Amino acid sequence: MLLTLSDYEAEAQARLTKPVWDFVTGGAGEDGTVRANRRAFDGWRFRPRVGIDVSSIDVSTKLLGCSWQAPIAIAPTALHELCARDGELATAPAAASVGLPFTVSTFGSRTIEELAASCPQAVLWQQVYVFKDRSVTASLVERAHAAGAGAILVTVDSPWLGRRHRDMRGEFAMPPGVIARNLAASTGDDPDIVSPSAHSRRTMDPSLTWRDITWLSGLTDLPVVCKGVQTGEDAVAAREAGAAAVVVSNHGGRQLEGARATLDALPEVVAAVGPDYPVLMDGGVRSGRDVLLALGLGASAVLVGRPVLHGLAVAGTAGVAGVLTTLVEELVDAMGHCGRTTLRAIGHDLVTPTLGARP
Ligand SMILES: Cc1cc2nc3c(=O)[nH]c(=O)nc-3n(C[C@H](O)[C@H](O)[C@H](O)COP(=O)(O)O)c2cc1C
Ligand SMILES: CC(C)CC(=O)C(=O)O
Image 1 (cartoon, rainbow, N blue to C red):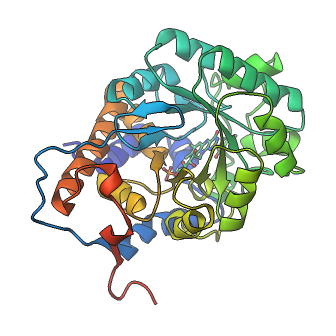
Image 2 (image 1 turned 30 degrees about the vertical axis):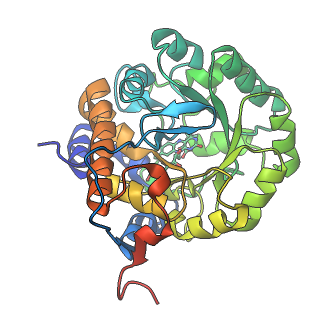
């Protein structure tokens, strides 16, 4: 029975080849930060209130110029065709049916134009990297705008891809026929990403600074969101560079082994930018209760990465819709039991450190 996101994960593992499973699941080094992201959620418990009418619960929100049915979005993950034949073409209708934004990766196996045409109801965001060749980044932004995207997420944690031991040991190579078509539409030819690590060394720009975010913000009227911020200082710098929001993210533990859990970094970031600036987070969110803890610690919304790929591998569109619906239902359930009926009613008083889990 597919009751929880762990059930989808186990079922996905049974369906994917080992190299693809390792690529999706793994992180930098020995996966220490991947585990830290998950464990951080065990460090917090709820302080439920009772005596409050919870017969009607509204988890919808308005953020970055669009309406969301719940404060959850799909994080950008490369090459959905690794997990399902139709790749992102299967993901988009699931996001649309649940009413949540879908961030298309630069390395999407389908172009943003194809996705916008095949699923006009979907709220699509475009993730970009600052490439050494700035014209490729600018083209991704321009195409996203023309395709009707709602926001640009610029990933700022990737001078190159992290040292991912699972992929290095397994000598991961992209299966033949899996093509980063979204990037290809901006470079003009099939980008050679057989080795994602080698490709990142050739193309991603390690000289990226906040000046580049200012440049990027000047290219578009769309909200630009900085993804990969992990400190209060950098959140303030992102805001000053023109970002409309930040995503507290360590790339799902795939970049710097030893980076702290994103849930641990979140309160510092929220304190630095104040309550009126949108702070999103991702990393290790695996239940609606996790979503609620992140909101209690100040997040405006969360993104989920791997669980969407698990849903895709299990049952395509229906699998992704199942994963997203589970998260929303669990969030509503937890809010009711906590005596909270709207997102506005969620504050720091909702959470308390787990006794014995923290110094
Ligand atoms: C297989 C895979 C591919 C990813 N590709 C990208 C990408 O192309 N661009 C990006 O900014 N982040 C990428 N990420 C990171 C996610 O956007 C997100 O930060 C991370 O998956 C969140 O953690 P979670 O998987 O625990 O939810 C990728 C993550 C995974 C697992
Ligand atoms: C295909 C890669 C460039 C994407 C990825 O693995 C990542 O961003 O974590």
